[in-house]
Length: 303
Image 1 (tube, rainbow, N blue to C red):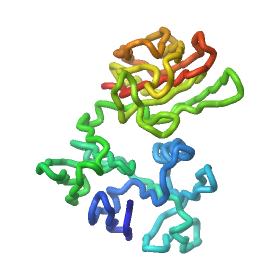
Image 2: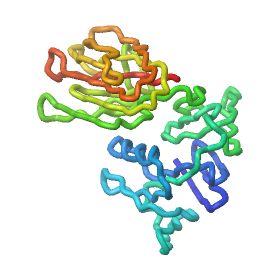
Image 3: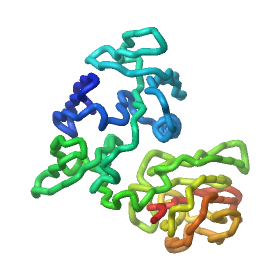
Image 4: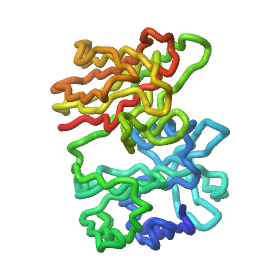
């Protein structure tokens, strides 16, 4: 967690349990989140992050909903955020703000050598990283050096932008059709109870949990070659899970089949060259919707 943070138009100075003290050029900071990222608001926050914003966003949380005001974020101190909207300047109590998202031009550095994903769900881009045997030492793209204890790092991504995890994307459309009255919403990188995805006795840090009947539709740019994933009923439920899975690209069926708790994990490697409309359907099997907890582990697109 962040212990202290201050920023102005030139730099952001942050001190935290996982990062130590960092001083970064303001232009290299895309967003700052003050509030915890719970499952109820994760999708809303990611949608705001991935949007094309011409102005800075001051994001506030109202129960399980995120809202924002656009304008210009000025300096940030321990208790206040300077914010300009139109001709007005206000000093907002930082305790009332969930986060800020800056309107930034595309980074000139291109894809990072390594994306460091922290256990508190923060992400830092590094141009170099080494392991001393007791800690990781990273040179960030912004130029600062940071040290990390191994337990503070969830994953290191060296794909340099060539791999895009499905859990990093926001569906263009979601349709839930419950068999009874309960709607089981899909989740990213964790099971319905908040624990890790587990299939075939192995835990996975990335992927989707999807319950029947759910349709997820994504808009791509036709830039990927393959879609890969490891698919199965989550180990946390009794052995009666049974779903039908259908994956389409531009309306063409890329995969279809039944998935049962008793089955070995299914390894998917699908050709998605040129695909712009990608959808995943998890439908009811022969056991109504009982224990229909499908995990799509390590689901990712590869360029």
